[in-house]
Length: 286
Image 1 (tube, helix red, strand yellow):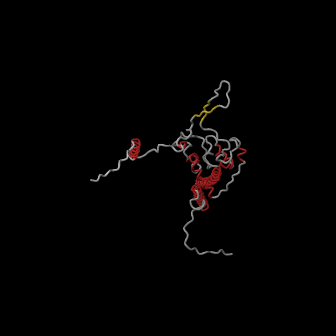
Image 2: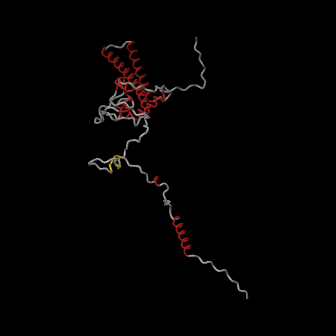
Image 3: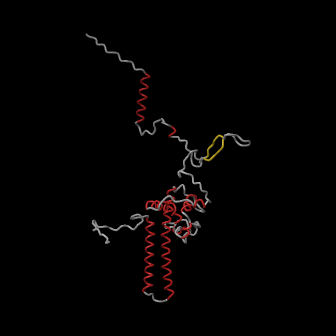
């Protein structure tokens, strides 16, 4: 009879088995549910930033002690002054004082009233200025000046569609938008310098169209009143004069609408009508 000897089983160390079982248990636990954290923070300053909340108080060490004053800590607002060398969004500090109207009057508008500039000015005017002064420059059509329906609103909101605007230079209007005046606050944080100059040019165009329409309406009203006071039937000349005055009012109203629309056609001009595919050229006679 042949005796077969089986190889001896290797002994398993208890510490290694315990570690293996622990790893398997952790793996099984990690598969149960969604993992929400890796357990470590890479670059922890990205998670816990040193930013301050608005109007939060800070403390700093005082550089020198004075008699009767604390020398260690001093509370200051979190809204600190900009660091040295910081460049303003205006690229340069506006150095004219709020009451220096003589210097403001000397400012020259660097922009020319092209279609793109007028569109930019209209966009910024409608967003920032129209809420008080109205889209057509009439403060009564805004949301701040008092009206018959809302008599409790703010007073002193000027309209920009009258002759009073003609007494202000471009620089003075720019100065008012930059630093504000009376109830109007400074808007230089909301409107960039180039946009302010564009607003000035658009306001000139809007004001001119408004004054032209007002003049045409006033002339028509005067003609109608004169003929009504006469008590006589109008002759052909008077009838034609009134009809022409009515046409002038309608024309100025269209011009004002085109300005307010911002060139919804071709560069602040009436929309071009449909053209045939081929138009026969016509040569002027010499």
